[in-house]
Image (tube, rainbow over all chains, first blue to last red; front, side, top):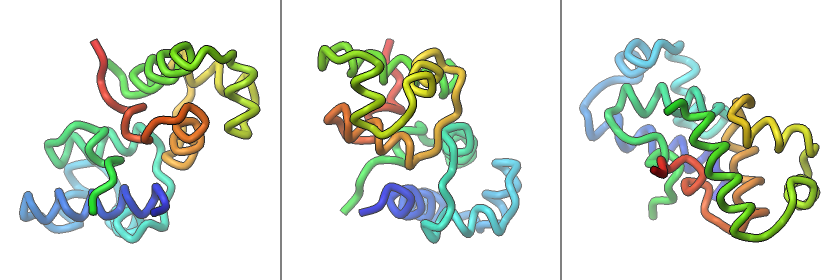
Length: 70
Length: 70
């Protein structure tokens, strides 16, 4: 699977686990909601700093967002 | 530690473990040597696609490059 798709799947997974909306995640990570939506759809190619911001807002370690999940 | 520094430390760690130079890693990952050098020094903010290219050239899973190592 493409790494962008892996990141997208993980962001959605941990966001739903936390029970928050894309809008809430975007607010907590200081990003735009459409950007978060693009990440979740595997369209965006985030930098490691963005991955770290998303991870902090989700309460997980950054590497967890790059881990391949079946 | 800053995520860029974590990635840099990991890239250097796995590159040295593989016993290859920055030049060889750059060639294998289809990147410029100065870019790889900047990543290792924690100056660059690579995208997840770049992380995946570096990981493939180093023979490790992409998430390994974001894992915090003491």
